[in-house]
Amino acid sequence: MGFNTSLGLGGSYSLTGSPTQVVSANTYFDLANTANQGWAQQYLPELYEQEVERYGNRTIGGFLQMVGAEMPMSSDQVVWSEQNRLHLAYKNKSGNETSVLTTVSSGLITLGSDYTNSVRIGATVIVTDSATGLKTNYCRVYATSGQTFSVKPYKTATLSGDFGSDGLGVNVFVVGSEFAKGSASMVGELKPTFTKFDNRPVIIKDHFKISGSDTAQIGWVETTDEAGQTGFSWYLKSAGETRLRFEDYLETTMIEAQKGVPGSSGVDTDLGIASENFGTEGLFEAVESRGNVFEDLASLGDFDLLLKNLDKQGAIEENMLYINRSLALTLDDMVAGLNANYQGGASFGVFNNDADMALNLGFSAFRRGSYDFYKSDWKYLNDAAARGGFGDVSGILIPAGTSTVYDQSLGKNMTRPFLHVRYRSSETDDRRMKSWVTGSVGSASYTGDDVMEVHYLSERCLVVQGANNFVMLKES
Image 1 (tube, one colour):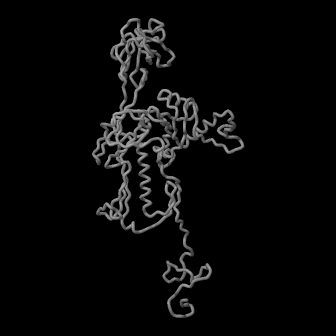
Image 2 (image 1 turned 180 degrees about the vertical axis):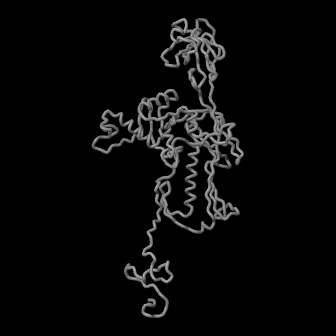
Image 3 (image 1 turned 30 degrees about the horizontal axis):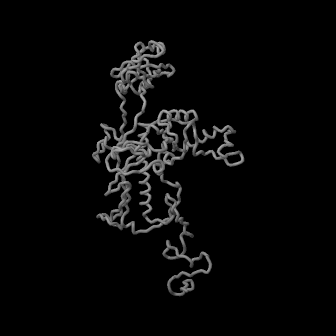
């Protein structure tokens, strides 16, 4: 027991314990009052040690892991080739390509400069008008020269009875051939051709730095990481979040990146890299330049137009739809509305739904025509801090399965997913995902700075094969 100064006894002021939890002048110290005469504030504030996850899982990656694969490469460039179509057809696309025109009186068909004339004498062709496609004539080719070939119809002396005027835009499709008895063989041959594509890897970097003094001031906070693991983290939580952000950048760069245009003003003066050697082709650029873009998908009729376009491409049966929330709801409503028992805005009696149970109108898969579609939300298109903040892209359709292509580096045909990542790697260095620590704090690699620095680096590119089977869904 200490001295009680209120009784006039000597000695210094002391703290007297209380057998019960009663607030009194003798049961606590006032740290804000050196005279220890009472607290400036009665109670300590409640301190929550646990970090609040107000944005849930903040990572937006994982898309490429679901739809593709990762493979090493040792070069500055990846080159692949893709098959062209098997049959010959020339379509009039006035405004996009030089037109295909016919002179009705002589049956002379002139190909635009964008086409190569591969039609041979003796071939049988179908000629249709490009305006409606309703006027057709079955013809035989009897002469070819440069970018022109001449045809004669089987039913009439000339094409004038069906087409009516010279210089009409037409489409031509080669269907076979016909020769007389004892005639010579067809002159010339059709050699298969391929289209070559290439892409190059880019170097992606990030880092985290903290001073040596701050590493000695330990502060703990209870956290839950993006994988759901809960625990207490020291200052390295910031380094961990830097890594999570960097891993997202590895994916978003592969989605959004673009190649530099030769001869443009986009020259990086800091790095001294010409524009044509800068950048890499990402998913969106590949699909927009080599694939299909469909705007404002809003109804079953729109969806059927998309299917008809798939018929003209590879007609791959199984496809995956990665879409934002708005389009997901549109497709749910569209599929639900197909039910014959559709009542008052709700769908009963389909997919195990009925009026007496909670409705499940969120469809993850459906079949239309001869195609199967597997629908999934894509967080990248919903997150306000990612592409979801723009709203211009509503989804993408990706074919399932693999493609067979000729790999220039290996010198043989390879079967690979349509979508895959190539990263730089060799026997001595793997640049898929590198990280190292420098500085004065707990590191085997020291520098003159009193800091701890965590570095991240990757060198990679995306390969989009068979892009003609992909569809980007956009808002106009």
